[in-house]
Image (cartoon, rainbow, N blue to C red; front, side):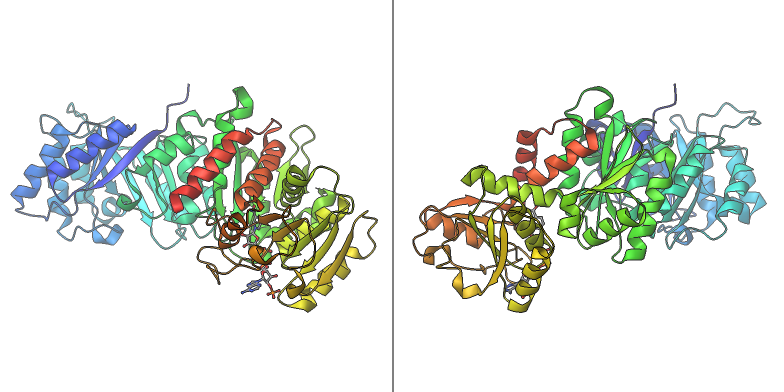
Length: 545
Ligand code: NAP
């Protein structure tokens, strides 16, 4: 059986007792190992206090530990001389309770035969005559990007026989950078750590377990991260279910820019966790993808073509929904009529049975489902006012007209409403109708449902406290339903006013849950746990208020 990938919490040590207490927290949180970064504690030659503190860390650590004194040249804070820190490692190894590992940079060993020899004397290896229990992690970091001499560097590191573990970490510039790290893990000749830093590197940290990495790093709290892009132990173990990731785990994610605040990872990972057996063996990750067609295309190709990844599909959000549809068409994938109609796809998924891929738009079906849940399944002739003329409005108008409704599009810029209505009406055999109308005709439009598809009222949006219209001013509309697609906050100014007017309401969270549920069913082939999704989304949104 493959060795389990360890979870290691890095701790920047200022005070020894605090570091030991953090290590105990790490143990309780489920970590296997801690790394004490002593570059603040130990200041070089003659620093007896720093040395005693380091010996105490190793002796009293509640978890097996790595001791690392990272020099400034490798992104750390140690500016003393190399000989002093290597001498400290020697004394640590010879102490009564030595650390399990020390981490020394490959560049340090490559620089000096003398230092290399001293490090050899401090660690266990095949030619070590002494009985030592500290092993060497040989590391290389690049905080800018993938090192240009990566392959030579890796080969030189592999030539270092005293190293029990190799560690490579570099700043990822895109999600694609993770894949080369997975190559390195799959071709390893000994336990290897290969991690990408930065927001694009999360995939390498979570999937270290899939590709047999020796360990992954995770922090205790979001604020204690020692490398950008690190996840917390709780996220790693609970949200991403790190302990159950194995070679067969399927990978999904959300592509967009930005995606760091997306609710989709919480929702889909909870969904997979609720499934039994192979269907539940999946993980869902944020996949930040820079704006622009080229970036989307390159990322999608890389993920789909990397067979060992078992990539099963993506939710696609702003600004890539049109790119997702274009990608599906250019690659001859099946395109669901809803995506074609909306001119955008929010889902790209693999059909595991045929191996083929398809594009879908579950926003559109979610909007129709939301409306049907309030006014009944027969929408024939039902008057529906759609406010806005962007992507969400296009999906709503098309979906509802196709279901038979009589849709009017109201938009600040009237010409955009006219154009959208004309475009959607052209060449369609939809049973319903689509027309454009003035914003100020909303109040007496007699619509049964009013759907806000603008960003008005959205937290951190251009007009947080605004609403597209005032539901309290609707004429003869006691039975009207007010539907806001915006879901941050959960109760937008529009929905608050609708509540005050005593009108029925649909919030953006309900739409989000319905679109996610339809997506999940495409990804997993299993029925979505809608109640659970609703709970996860509302709890997450509630935490924001
Ligand atoms: P979009 O393409 O950028 O369209 C924005 C629309 O809002 C345009 O019609 C624009 O009118 C209008 N608008 C913007 N600022 C305005 C203002 N100050 N006054 C009046 N109108 C204004 O956006 P989108 O992609 O369609 O998304 C719209 C909303 O849908 C988002 O805020 C998002 O929260 C929501 N959404 C929700 C879900 C869900 O699952 N719940 C899914 C997708 C989208 P002009 O044409 O005059 O500029």
